[in-house]
Every structure is written in structure tokens, then in C-alpha cells.
Length: 614
Image 1 (cartoon, rainbow, N blue to C red):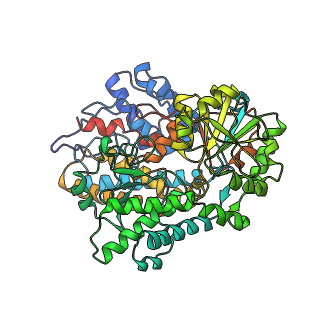
Image 2 (cartoon, rainbow, N blue to C red; image 1 turned 135 degrees about the horizontal axis):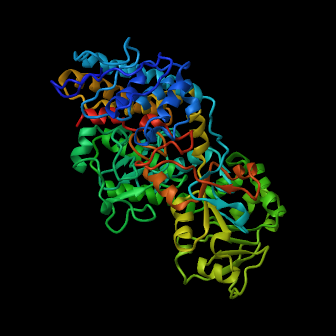
């Protein structure tokens, strides 16, 4: 029998009922022995007798067999480990210890406890073996990087109007654009803000930062925060160097960031908030530039005010956009910077051929959008859209009722006419959503709007106006490809198995057992580090921390009905398709009915160990 976690406790040896090798397999009549009989089949279950055991279990009184009704009996003979575990978890009393499978006798007749250390390592090997079985099945169940994922049930049949942002929604940019933004903002810091000329030695590293990170403006720290406002230790950077965990804990008096210090609703550091969240894809070069300038000051022992540094870098990045530097560079070499044009054209053509209305609302200027859409779709691109709005100033566009629309001529001249309707083929500037709704009548869940910025593009639309929303997350495609690799599957499957084992075996609190458990804890920590590094060696995945979902994913789940890597994913679905969110169990629910790709009964704490701890 497994050793008791409590010193001196000895399990009772029940009178032996029929063994699994007996021909009848009939359970005993008394309930105590029925429980013993049920649990101890874990010791000798084989594929040959699996079906007979299942039938015998179903013949027990309802109170004992009810726990097995949901199990798929036909699969028992194929999964010995799951069967043994299920049998070992049922009908356990405080004084009864189920037998270890693999021992000669199916019943415990000895009161001598086996060595706890040996028992724990045997369970470890057992879990390892089960993990290998899961890995083989998981390798045949890959995720499609071009799929659309749903947070909320939504049918395309109900969608009559499709709306789009421009940057990173209709137009996708190459990595050369981030290098351009970084270099231009760096030079602005040097030339206009009098920063040291030595900063020119720093070049853009596309593999340093990820989207969704938080920046502590006052402490000049870049970090990853989870959905519960906890800092992921090991991902806090001062400049280009990681900050030790103990220093982070000392600064924040733990690893939790209070609500009043978090960024505001739109991710900004305002009104007393000390954190800024970088949600925009354009913010990747900004985070890298902040870290490089911090690194320079720290390495050269230069005393500086972090708040001033943050403001100067923010202003430099803003000027790259506002002064038109980025727009002119892209227009001058549009083929170098814009990609995926043919896929965007195919999506728009598909929607137009099905009679869907379409509109464009972007913060980018008219001439820039026109040249980009000419490159992506063709010179008649405006024929596809019923309404086009540029320089909308989102998210203010969704909230400020005072700003009227203005017409923009083909030469870029602004007209002073009062706008009574929004005409097809005409470009409008500024305006506000309330006037847009009044002039178009496009309200509620028949509208689906796509954008890449979760706050500026999607939050107000889903919270205040009931539009359906689709998030474009280009990083999703590369992350799914990593998740489909055998290396990642092996890491995560064993990480889950080891975590479940730790959860169940923690009831053994003697010194020898604790040494074994500490070895497992160290191995789990190493696995987490490996899982982080396969995505990004500094910050890991944009969707997960070691413990939980990221704050980024929390906001994505709240403000986006569906999300995908690019608009081209729509080409894989007909316009009658209904997106269903994957049914995943809550923490207090059994995973038996959940999606088989998600649920795993191995994560449920076993009654056996829980009973032993009482």
C-alpha cells in the first residue's frame, strides 16, 4: 500500500474479495469490501479484463458506481493508467489505502508501509509514462495558424456590415518599418532633444520586446504582468538587463501591482497611474528605444529622471508619425514596407461579392491611405467601401460627440460644407461615432469591426455600442507554429503532468518526501523557463505568463468576439459560418465533457491523496 502521509498511521487490511483474474469478478456484498474491491482493481487491470471489470463496477450500488458513469467504458482497456487512477480514486475511506498497481497481490495484507521516497519516485515514473502517451496523441492534433478563434459565439450570417482599421488590419508591414521608426526616433532624440550622440550605436532588435508589456514610468522598468496584476518574475528589465527577483519584490513589496498604479482604461499612464501598457504593434520600437536609452545612462553612471526620459521617447515616437516622416518613407518605397496585399484584396472582394457593406475608419492621413490601398487593392479601391474616414483620432472618435465630419478632396483640401450624409466614393476626416451612427443607421450586432489595437479600436465599440469586434493579432500565427512543434508539446505536456503530480503528492510532509518534492519543484521551474524561451527569451509568449494568462490576453478576451492572425483567415470560412468558443471547464468543473484538446482528467486532484491528508 502507499505510505500514509501521517507518521504512525497504518492502513487496515480488508478481507480479500475476488481478484481480477477470477472468472466471476463478482463484487462482495458488504459495502466496506465493495470499496476495497473497487479500488484494488488498479493493481491488476489489463486490456484483457478491462471490459469485465467495467461491467462488474456498473453492477455496484449507485452510490459507488455513479462516479464512473461518465467514463468511456470502451476506452478503459486502451488506457490502463487512467483506469487504474479512476479505480483508485473511488470509495476511499479515511482508513483505507488503495494498493499500488504492479505489485504481486491485488490486496494489502501487510501493515508494513513502503518507503515514501520510493513511492513518490514510482508515481513520478508513472506520470512520465502517461505523459509520453499524451504526447503521441497531441502530435496528431495540431492547431491551424490560419484559424479564427472565438471568445464569444458569433455567426457571420448575422453580419451585414464590415468595418476595418487600416494599419496592421488592411495593410501589413514588413519588419523594415520598425527599424525605420526606431532609427528615426533615436535620431530625433539626439538632434532635437540633445541626447548623447553615442546612442547611435544602438540598433533595433526585433527579438527584444513583445506586445502587451507594461512600463513603470517612475522606475524605468519594462515588465510582463498577468491577468491578476502580478508581475512575472524574471521578466522585469531595467535597460537591457533583467532585474533580480528579490529586488523586484523589495521594490513592489511583493509582485502584485495595485489597481491604482496600473495603466488607465486605454493603457496610458495618466491621472496618477504609474504604468503604461504598450498594446500597439507600432509600440515595439518604442519599448526597445526606451530600454536602449536607459541602458546607456545606467552603463555610463549618468543621473537622469526616468519620467523625463519616458516623455522624450514618447514625443520622439509621436513625431515620427505626426510629422509625416514614417508616411513619406513608406510612400517612397511602398513595396519594401507593405506586404500581404493580395490576401487583403481577396477578402474585400469576397465580402463585396456577397453584398456586404464595408467601411474604413483609420487614424492615418488621406494621401497615405490612398497610396497604400492603390498598392494593395488597385486604383478603384474606394468602390469597395461605402464609407471612408481618415484621421479619425481613435479612441476619441468613439467618445467625443462634438467633432463634425469634413470632406476631403482628391488633392487633400478640406471643405467647410455641413455633412448631411456619408457618400460612397468620398473621403471624410475626423467626425465621431455618434454622428456616424446617425447618418448610416449601422447599429448593434449586425456590424463587425476589425482592428489590431484592443483599446483604441475595439473596447468602446463592444462596451458602449454593441458592435461585434475582431482583433487582428499577427503574433498569433508564429506562436501557434511554435506550439505545434514537438519540443513545445513535450515541454508543456510534462509541465502539466508534473504540476498535477506535485498537487497530489504535497500531502507527504516528512523531510525525505519534501526533498523529493523540492526536486520536482526545481524541475518545474526549469520547464517553465524553457517554455518561455521558445517564444521570446526575455518575455515569453504574449498570451501566457508562468502562472496565468497575460494582462494582454485578459483584455483581448474581454473586448474581441473573435481574433485571428490576419484578415486572410476569413478566406477559410464561408459567410454563414458560426464561431463557437471552445468549451473549457471552470476550475470547479469536471473536464469529461470538455473539448478533448483542452480537458485532461489528470489535472483533477485525486481523492486518494486528499483522503490520506485528513
